[in-house]
Image 1 (cartoon, rainbow, N blue to C red):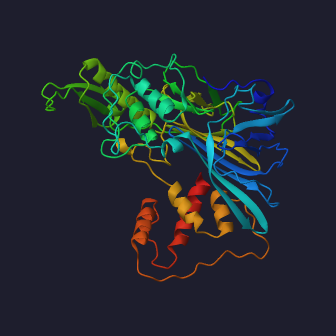
Image 2: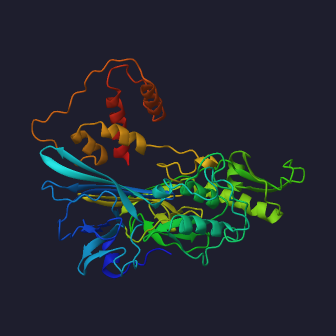
Image 3: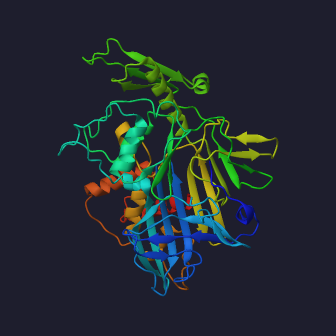
Length: 487
C-alpha cells in the first residue's frame, strides 16, 4: 500500500501554483547531534538550491546543492537524513512522513558520503553527495563461518525469508518486517542450500539479490533502516493514476512494448550425490507474448540441490518474473507527487485519441523514482520496471549494468570549480560579467594504461572518433555534461 496522503497536502499535489517544502533533518552517527537544513530551518534558513534524488529497485542516491556564501553551514559528513517531500499549504508545512501524511513514511535513509565546498563566480556553495541503504549493503562484507575464507557455514533448512532475516537483522542490525500477506509461496516455503563466499567474498547487497532472484518478491526500503517484502499481483489495486487531460496530470510518458530475452526459462534440479545429473528434473516456463512475437530463446539455471519437481517449477517461474520485472516498460514525468513510493502500482491514461491505459501488465511496479527540486521545477520521474543502472549489485549472478557515476565523479573532481558545479547542477551557476571558461592546457606524453582505460570507457559511452589532441578530459567532460543534462 502506498502512503496515505490526504487533505490540504493531497490537494496541493495537483495545484497549478505550488510552494515546495523539503524536510531534511541530518543526524550524526551517534544520534546526539542534528542539523536542520529543511526549507524552514530556523538555524540556517532555506539554503536549498537543487536536489537530484534517485530511488531505484536496488540503489538510492542524491546530490544536494546548498547556498553557503556566509560559510555557516556545518560539517555533516557521515550524517544521515530521511527526506520528506511536501508543500507549504494553508495548514502549514506538510510533507510525507510528518506524522499525519504517510505517518512516519518519508523516504528511506541516505548518508552524506561527501561534502564539497565550491567557490565560483564570487559565491560559495556546498554540495552534498548521499547514498542509501543498498549502497551501504554493497560495502558490507558478510562474515559467517571460519576465518579467513568464511565459506564453511552454509544456510541449510532455512527458508529464503529466514536467510534474508539473518542478513538484514543479524548481520546488518536493521529490520525486515514480517511477511504478512506478501508471500509468493516461495520466499517463506523453499529451503535452499545456500552457501556464502564461494569464489569471492560477498557483500550483503549481492547476497540479498541472489536470494530475491529465487522468488517473485521485491524488497522496499523504508525509513528507520527497515525493509518490507512486496509481492506484485496483477489483481492489486492501482495506487495512483496519472492522466493526459485531468488531474493528476502527467507531462509526458513513454511506453515500451518489448521482447523479453530469454523468452523461456529452464531450471534443472536434482544433480544427484555424484553431480552427474542422471536423474535430473526441470521446470520450464515461457513468456508467451515474446515467444510468439520473436523467438524461443532459452535461459538455463542450475539448482543441483533442489529435488522436488514443484520447487523447480516455482524457481523457473520466479526467474521469469524477475526478467520481466527488471525490464523497463515505461518512463513518465509528472508534477512532484509525494504519495508515490517504490514498488507502488501506478497507471498512465492517455486520452488524446482514445483512452489508452499503461502499462498493460498488471504486475509491473514503480522500480525507479527521480525527485528534482530546483528554481521553477518540482518534478518526479517515474520508471516502471527496470533495475539500477548506477551500481552493479549483482555481479555474482552475471547481471550487466551501465555505470555512469564513477566516471562522472572522477572526471568532475578534476575540473575547475565552476565547471564542476555545472556538472552536478546544470544551469545553476551563472557566470559573472567578463568571465571566460578555463582553457585546456596542452599535455603531450606517451599513453599510459589509465589513458587506455579511459578511452575504452569513452567508447562504451558512445564518444566516437576522439581527436588525438591533448587534454582528453575535455572530451570526457563534454560527454558527462550531456549525460547529466539528459537526466
